[in-house]
Image (cartoon, rainbow, N blue to C red):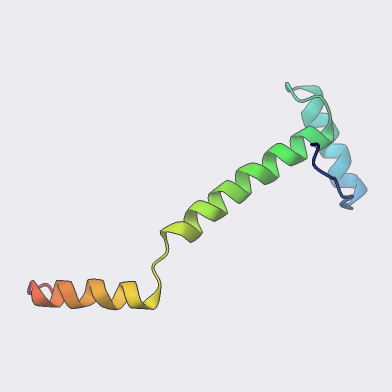
Amino acid sequence: MRESKVTVKIPRPLYRKIQQVVEDSGFNSPTDFIVYVLRDLMGEAEAAQASEFNQEELDDVKRKLKNLGYL
């Protein structure tokens, strides 16, 4: 099953710059390049989100460090 797609509007000058990048790369189209970049950024954001501690976890770590004499 193919994923449905949506249209995203970007400024034309930015699109032209992306077209220039695509001409000198292995990407087939500006859309392929944009999807690649967005997936990469989303992966970084998800990884950063996953590594953040919630308040309960932070309190637990602080308690353990205090019990060990570090705080």
